[in-house]
Image (cartoon, rainbow, N blue to C red; front, side, top):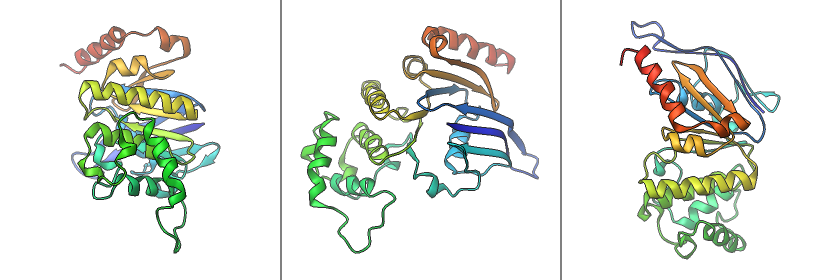
Length: 257
């Protein structure tokens, strides 16, 4: 279970541009939930992910993961339990290194290298087997530098690498936004398969309303640092894209757009 309790977050404190994004923000995500998060720009979606991962600090409140208060836990330590895939495919991989080297780095996450080799020959067949599941032919390109791959191939690798070691939570930060529609569909199908296979508690921020409706078992809409829609289970199954658009239109009218 992941809990955000009474989160406060301010930007530009002490300036004329000071802004309060979160004021006592609460959110509880149960084990095994796949939560799709939508909302307008500036609604707090990505800031929420950054707070969960420790990329930005809070100005109040607590973050509790599986009963443990991690509010003051360093970002790199949180990634022992969290896998994250970013919007930019280049952020989840090292372009100057080969596919094999990238896979080895992900495989050794959280481990001490000491004086042993970074790439263990005994693991290569395992890497090939994992890559073959992507159906992108990457298992035959182990010595190709990742920078030479397409955005979709790199994002598929990012997802695979983020979930190679045992994790409890998967954070998806608009991970299909930089891809063409066909490739984005492939990545979403792969995402759904990985989440179900590994039974991961997942939070996915997306601007694609169809993906938000079709994938996951809970849907949240955020606006100005608040949750304005929260549907789970059967309520989530019955929601339609038009329903979400209607709420977006109401928000736009309220904001004078």
